Length: 257
Image (cartoon, rainbow, N blue to C red; front, side):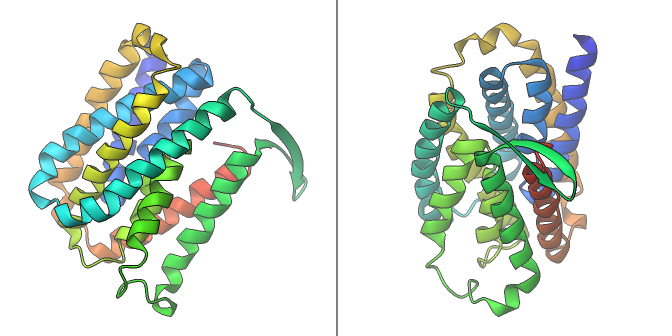
């Protein structure tokens, strides 16, 4: 059990550090690791709790940078989307359908849900490299739909940071406000989905060691990220998000995550 917890702690530290710069990564990295040791419904619950506590800690570091208007216009729709996504996840947990397919002679076993989300991540991340062809920056039309979409997939699969970053990075938020506001919105989505997850994962509290120590590791990663935040430029932040999305999207399509 010690080795298992140590592995989870390492993933939490690295994932928390990366998400502080990109708004993406901890939940995506942590869920597969938890799923190595627990059934999927327990893994989802553990991931959600660690993710929320880590976000709450990061919020304490970045609260002064939060843009509350953006939290209202983007965060409230995200909460509603998260509730819908979490309810669908609860249904899919008990009706899991597996498919088999071949990509470049590589045998893959995956679910329709993961394939769709993976393709969506790849498509949206590729748009980052061609953003000059789109006029999202000067329009507020995408804020509410973006909140609903990111919240929906946050509740459905935990991949809220990926889509949220795509929409928020096109706003007028500066680097600190972008990160602080994203963390606040992530907390709202986490609260919405955890309340539904726990209805089917009440026994996760028996594994408190898998929550306590990973949370400490995630806190250290967040603290380290906050210390080095001023050394990161916005262009680097933007393209890092896009590259992470492409990599994780491909892995999801191949059934590796």
